Image (cartoon, rainbow, N blue to C red; front, top):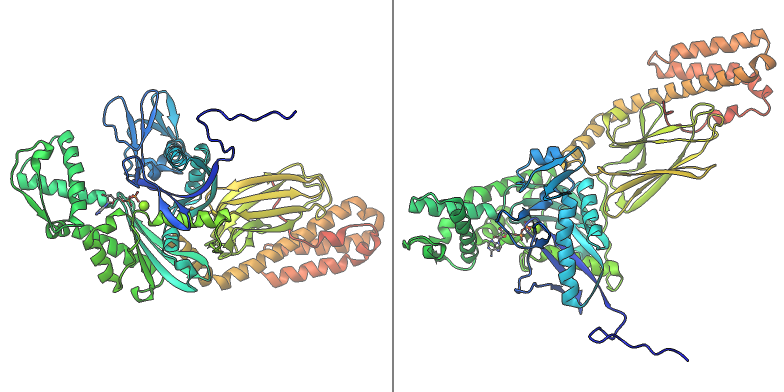
Length: 615
Ligand code: ADP
Ligand code: MG
């Protein structure tokens, strides 16, 4: 008899919990979660009804609290941890990040001394994501099956990878990382436009980011980015604090100042709705002096900072070789763009009404939720959302030359492979040098990584086959694997800093590659001729060692040696044509010998591309 199933009292009768796909805006100041529900975006609220989850992590001796700021000595509280994700100790020392505790670290990571533990920014950020996951799953009474997390467009590979690691630590499955400005453009439905240039002006609490996107047939490309990582709405609050202090002619202690700062924030937000506010000083424990603060006063205070954002906007336009008239859409993102003076200034600067109908706090999370919905497969829409790689990726081949494996502007995700062979007889190791850039010579490009393939079975030069595969995932992270095809042994690495380069550097590298195209081609041809010469000498030498004296008489041997020595001398001449001629001569002189070596591989040795031998 079949057993009856009895459900546990109080538990859901449905064994299949609901599954959700969400978009997460992991912000420096605030984080948000959104999802598509019945065809419409919905932004999740916390218990207090707010859609913003402060990105604050507070550690006590035995517990962690997310979302609340604790100023007491029993807590270690991190705010703006996003500023530290994927950064190293040098970055921390040179940044304006305030660390609430001691820290250690090295070239790759920072670790904070939090009571008895050493915690990385990845672990601290994962607490925020864990908190968002728990609240979402409780509210929706289901599981998050997958998510799209947004990151600033300028985030490099290390920062992207660290964000992904934080997500995995929190138990979230990341379907895709999405650039914040791209998310904003998706939220406004701009992805359906054929061609468009979109400027995204994002002013949050502590950071200002500006990006220009180029949308072409469903492919978003980041043309240029800029900003100021220590300029945001919080600076407006400090200005109000200073203003009130100077009006009252008092200097407050740090505790009172903090209370005034929180009040200043409220005043600022109120001024986005009203023209004038009464400052109620008794609310913050001060004597009730009559003081009012108007929108005009506020505008005057923040004018310098607003002008600074516009100056940065002009620079970013210049970087992309565009003028304000080339921009088709401007999107306002970030809580601080609610300030009427900012809306007005941006509109004036671009001579165009910016898009601001969608709540600027929510717009990034909404875009991410649309993307998550599409990736979950439940949406009918088929939005192609591709990014492109900014610079070509390749490897170093003999002669310190770069061979491109994935050309710049390839849409990602993508993969490509090429086969390489050994340069010397019996070669058992190869050094793979991954390069980024547009120039022909390795020294003019950027070195991304080096790794070594070992245990190649000893064979004749040119007989081994090494398949190199480059893969770039949808988040722009490159992995390189090398397979030795006779043994099928795979060596692979994940290359971290493939984006770790800013746009002006990219532009410089591109410009250099155009400016130097002619000399580059010349050096490439010369280097190729030298490599070819060395290869022919090596293969002749190794063949002669095996059977030279058996197959050739002394006179014949002398001819070959002479031609070989002439070629050897020519290699340093710097004259491509002479080297090619000397190679031809050596090959001609060796023809009889080659034909006598019935079973030799010599012809094979003279073909193929080699990678530098590891030594
Ligand atoms: P982040 O992207 O850095 O996480 P947000 O986009 O959430 O930041 O923006 C937070 C900032 O927006 C804070 O400085 C906050 O005071 C400011 N802000 C929020 N609402 C308003 C408003 N109505 N008027 C002006 N500033 C606001
Ligand atoms: Mg933001």
